[in-house]
Image 1: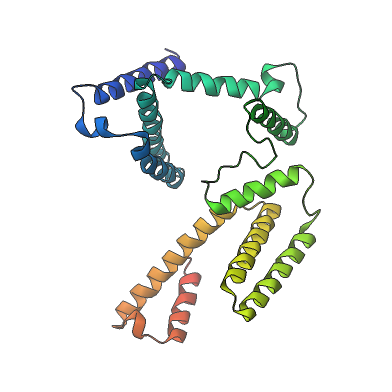
Image 2: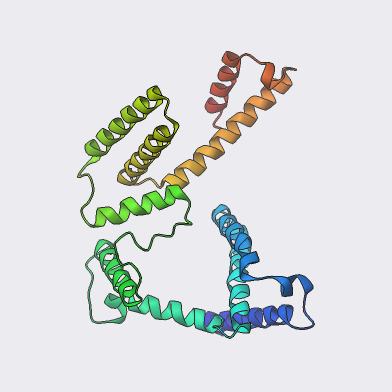
Amino acid sequence: MDWKETAGRRFFELLSVMETLRGSTGCPWDKEQTLKSLKAYLLEETYEVLEAMDDKKAHLEELGDLLLQIVFQSEIRREAGDFDAGDVAGAITEKLKRRHPHIFGSESAENSAAVKVRWEEIKAAERRNSGKKSGILAGIPKALPQLLRAYRIGERAARQSFDWPDLEGVWAKVAEETAELKEAIAENDKKHIEHEFGDLIMALVNLGRHLGVNPEEALRLANERFIARFSYVEEAVEKEGGKMNETPLNHLEELWQEAKKSGC
């Protein structure tokens, strides 16, 4: 049997299980859920997929949990007479074909950069046709993690040539925003400080974009390094019979440097 046929049969079974769970003799908890109550679960499962992507076994399991959220929401919509899981699959299939005219149509694309430009043009046209704002930044979700949102904003603006031509210009912007933040701190104006702090973060995000570094992923890795090194310091202080909040800062720094050298 072709893998697509197997996938289809398994997906059909998943839909049937979900229908049963929401049915009159189904699970009390599943029957109580609403689109609103599922929002938190959708967000949680999305982050769990991100965390599991480096482990194929965990990735398989977490993708299943994420798929359940899509099927769950689709079933609630089906019950309301709005649409069903088949409509969801059909809509994304149609969208993929529409946004790949160089594959499913008569157009051509020389490289991935050309594909991205055409993709954004098609998205803008779709938004205009639906009555939504069609500006180049219009489709970026407000609910995205803000580092990632800033990255996407800079990325899309750059496609319209609204960008620095090289790293030197980005570094200059970082220096400019740093100076402005220092001025705001000197003024002791909290609102101004928040404003300039945000501008500095945005400049650093754009620096990451020019360096090919995703700020969300870079910060995630930095967080993991900090946790590993801090744990190393905690354990070292405990072995010495001391307490973190009673240990001199210079000794904590020595242990921190040990942690770095150890590969944490």
